[in-house]
Amino acid sequence: MNELVTGDAVVLGLRPAKLPSRALAVFIDLVVVWAGYIVVSMVLAFAASSLDTAAVAALAVASFLLIPVGVPIAVETLSQGRSLGKLACGLRVVRDDGGPIRFRHALVRGAVGVVELLMSFGVIACVASLASARGRRVGDLFAGTLVVRERVPADRAQVVPPPPPWLVGRFSQLDFSSVPDELWLAVRQYLTRMSQLDANVGSSMAQRLADDLAARTGVPLPPDVPPMAFLAAVVSERQSRDARRAFGAVPTPGGTPPARVGGPSAPSPRVGRPERSGPPVARPDDIGPGTTGTAKSASAPAGSPAPAPGPGRGSDSGSGFAPPA
Image (cartoon, rainbow, N blue to C red; front, top):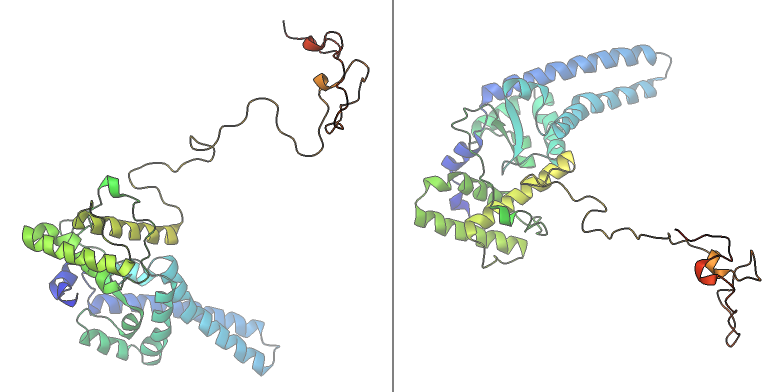
């Protein structure tokens, strides 16, 4: 699988950010974060002037963990990898396969960033970024992330082609937990560049990638599905899951609205008298001529004679209800 992920494919698909733009984004983030930290520290200093030394130290540690460390982690998680500095510079943090980051990625980046950005004044991050082929710092290596450029020319932007309509939602039950990021990256790069490949080479690569993906998910490749269409459908399913985790329910591909409760597939409501729970209720046709206001017993003893029908029973005249004209 490693030979499928070439440096040329990575650059064309993800376009890693350069060190100057990353340094400018980090500088903007640090200025904003430390300005907020100083303001909060001054407020706490005035508010906690009557507290003892231990309480003041605890507040100082809590404010440091909350603002310079916790705020960047929360911002990257909620904004899907775009902090204020990255938004200004047109950058974004993504996974190795190009997907949006989650909380665990932002947590690892923020925890390691305390050492390589704050304690070493960015020296460790600069050295690691210069030594990395894709400009990744130590936090990116541990978290499996990459800082990429979002603002690219429209003609150079590569988009994963959508799957055929008849395959949308067919692989919604697959388990992707065992699929490594390197395989996802290889599939993504193949789908974005398959039009540039020779037909025989592209077909063989699609078959290899589909077999590897099927082996990781534990479900064999369906015989009626071409490998290229299978790869596109699986990638689309994973993107839909990431969107649901990040933003909640998303529209179904193809514009089909979700099924409503009580729609065509739901049983139609019963027309007539509604069913009631509890003891039986007397109805007009259960009342005989000599039992006005008294309901017949629902569990009459066996062998007891049935009450004789009263006059006008078929038309409910004995009960006071006139039949419709």
